[in-house]
Image 1: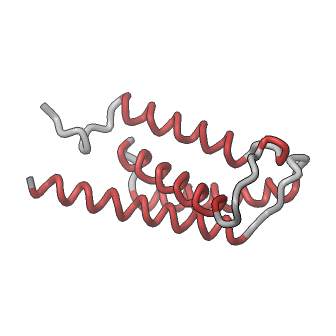
Image 2: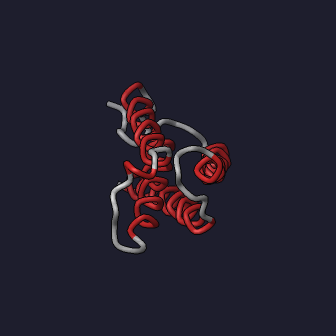
Length: 120
């Protein structure tokens, strides 16, 4: 039986696809649909979202360099779109930094889990 972390089959790709769809809903929802929250919570949401994108992307078999470039670009484009569209949202460098921090956290966590699993 193949190891779950090494299996990059339909379940892993489906999980990544679901996370991407959730990210589209979160990042591109109109301002009226974004719930109010205490200051800083939105940065935690951004970081968590990109951490899960990184984890699920690695599980789906996307290489670290490719995934990193794609998600950093996705984060930047999402901020530009938020600042330019009828979403009535604002672009934020701080949100982009939170996205990148979440991405790095997700990639590091994946490496830690994979290394730990190889040792068992």
